[in-house]
Image 1: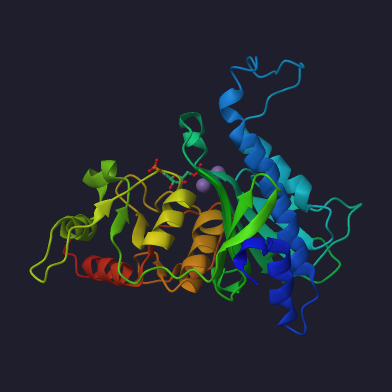
Image 2: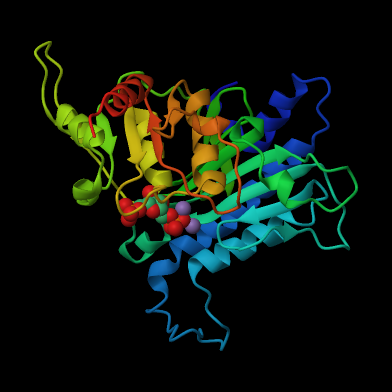
Length: 337
Ligand code: AHG
Ligand code: MN
Ligand code: MN
């Protein structure tokens, strides 16, 4: 069958059939997530109309409170996901503590971590934003409320990770440890249709993505590496292109398709970088590794091997095409301070 009518639901069900022990719970979780994504996508698309349609202050024309999109997306994720009976606990970039499953709902065996709206400072300029998610199996006993320890597992324990980019079209990309697959939302049918099967990130990068405004604060090895990328070499290598959107999800999506490296380093101002291990770095690292790339913290560790110590921990990240990450690792490890 051609790709054109493969919905995300069918694709997930068929992938699960290959695993005789699968219970269908992960399929149900991913289905719930794709529904939340559709609702957030609709709301993001309406963002530019807020002024025109008479929304003023924090109330709309119906006198209802208008929520900021990141708060809206956070609540939508929680409400779409907390009653399916598959989760033990959740955590979100927008919530200080863990999110418990209300007592009236069934407890399941999975744990969901998410960044409800990544890149939200870009919304008013119509720039792509996204939702990032990460799923683990619980380690606390079945049938009891999930705990913070369920949320603090190292990234290599993830069973599913993915993101949704709300861009020129809405695309959902996920991995369940069996390759990386992308589905584009057909706005007419309201269905995510398979558009990118088994995505592999090109081994060689052409693009680097980093906030160069922070150059002054970088470590010497990183400064040298970026200068190296901007130069040609005597074996005919062309200089890299710089591309930086400022929405990690959109920057990573482009680099995944075209080949590239995304860096949010530690520097003199931000000793642990900016991005969050649980909601941003781990899910992206799982996806990129599944696509054949690498993700490291620049301190000798794979992102996926880091043992989280707190829910909102930040880590430096160097992620993307294998050769580019190998190269930056070399520059950093050889730097003279
Ligand atoms: P969020 O909107 O979830 O807070 O994340 C914003 C992040 C990330 O998407 C992006 O890569 C990074 O902030 C950009 O940071 P700088 O503006 O410091 O470059
Ligand atoms: Mn984010
Ligand atoms: Mn966010």
